Image (cartoon, rainbow, N blue to C red; front, side):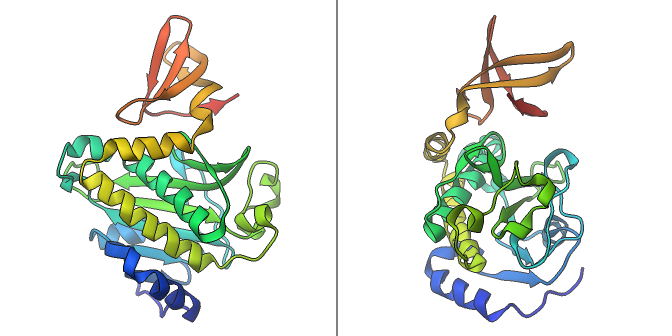
Length: 264
């Protein structure tokens, strides 16, 4: 595994100001460039490790999608978590991990910048209809293994390609002013430490309530998805106790736990 680099002074300053609230995520390993922060974090494999890169050459999102990660304009972060250590119902904690990280991201962005963002199931952060951030959780698949949660946040407009201008946005685009991305990093890590505590201590309702408050499309939005017999459509009807999306169809409620969902 390649060695981390000396962190920029601005990063050190932002982390020092937030340090009392960072808890287990107070030590950040900085890399000028990596293939993927998730790969580096998985190689470390220690709960609480944080990997930050100025750019990724092959950043990835959910279901094999690329995550555009140019230098100096976005946040490309991975943290190592261990939901199997949850004191109550580790299996449920693992299922709610991405939900918990999403809640932490919108709370941290709000605290750092004042920008109110919304959550869209299962792993996206939006402002109105444009994507601001995404989350990718990966593990080796064994229950006792750590889980790496990677997240990318568009801070400057250059953090997404012009071709995505109608579908993506950035914090600076929304606010019309320059933002210190390292302050955003510090606040998202502080929020994540608090929400990870909720996860480990079995405060699952607190996580789900936080997600529901920031997920307007979880109710009343039209969606479609693939089934064994073709495409199905329905209307969102919330999430259940395990974070699965509930969709109302003609003959009842469908429970969606994975797959490619299209928002209509």
